[in-house]
Length: 167
Image (tube, rainbow, N blue to C red; front, top):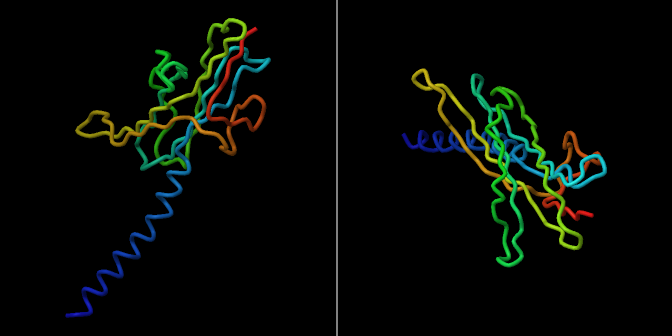
């Protein structure tokens, strides 16, 4: 009888060890970054790119992109009011999915650049009782240093913030 608790504890520990890499992999695939910032090809534009891990088959993956402005008087980022609609970016069962959204702004006046960052809301949808419902949600603010970012200008560009300088 004493061997059973040890065996149960061993099985639980083994199961948790198997789940840890999947969880770490999922977190690594959940990110947001600035992939375009006021370039020649995209003036006065901030591009935000994001990735989310897939889940069980028969799930829908959605993202919504937003922009935030750094308010120097308050010393923090505030909403700009610019936000995409919810975009269906993939289905569950996939490894991970990337998508992006570009925000175009009026050029700031000379000598008054503004600093922006992106924020991305993620939703994983599943069918319950015949209706699509949110089964998981997350939010990420843009960060730098992401590798393998698609559609960057220039290639490989990944930053936490974007400064639009204007004329």
